[in-house]
Image 1: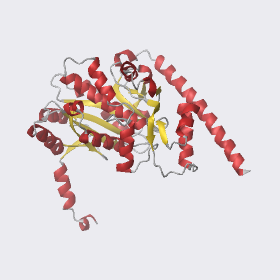
Image 2: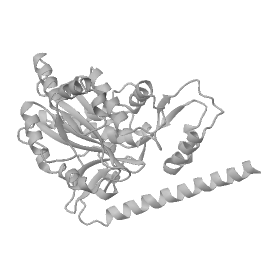
Image 3: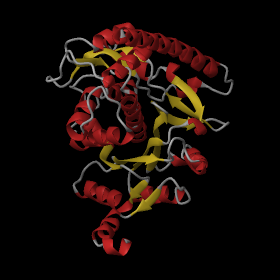
Image 4: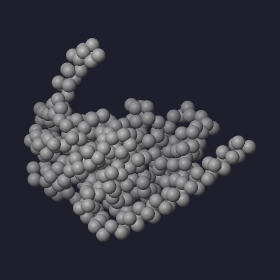
Length: 383
């Protein structure tokens, strides 16, 4: 029958995906270990966040039909089997109508979390000369997988559903992930977060840093006696091509990883990395090697959440685990990504502007003036 034939095809797809998953992991490790120029140990302080299994359930729509399996659900199930195995598949297809793992759909969220975690870590180290393990623990706990923690995948996916109508269990794009992080930062009452980041500005469809927005944010911070050591986080969601990055952008993208984009002396601005990656696979890029390969942290590694939920040392260990590190060539990147910067003051803004003056990916603009131009635009003049 047609039903039996479809079932056989479905089973063959599952077996093929599982096979290719194993081969991909083996080849990834071989390429990493055979690169004599790659020193993973020097990146031990880079924080890494990856897939988790067995975390407290993320509840989905209670009105879902338990007996209905759409084509989208089938594709999701394949993806879970591909990356997470049978146990994860069973857990995520139970009658509880919720998710206990993000395997197969959470990589953009995880790479965005990783960008933010490293941003907080960089700022904390710059502001605190006595930075220690306790400070690191404070940062890591912000990202634990439970509704009680501000940057948990639970809170991010809930915002994605309520604000942007992205179903829990669906893949996020860079702009949705960035805006969810922005919302949490703007509404957070967490002391540590507010000491480090005073606001988050997101550019959804261009690489435009609006100077007037940044300046107004800094002035408002200073006028309200908010911590003047806190920074503005700028997230630029860009698309640098259709299916691949336009080669005209290669050098400008690589230039962002130059050490001059981290103001170690004045501590007024920072480039904090890129969340994006290869097609269908989001990663966090934070450095470039001598051969212009981009170094990244890959969230497609699974940790059982129960092992870190109540153990701070194990929690930190997962954030510092180098097994997820690898590298790729800029030609292999997906063109859709989120680029992050922090700016602490006017001096930092102007210094960053000077460094980026020839960069064709990122431009500086005035939001107020651009909005006024749009409002005064006569459509008849465009015909």
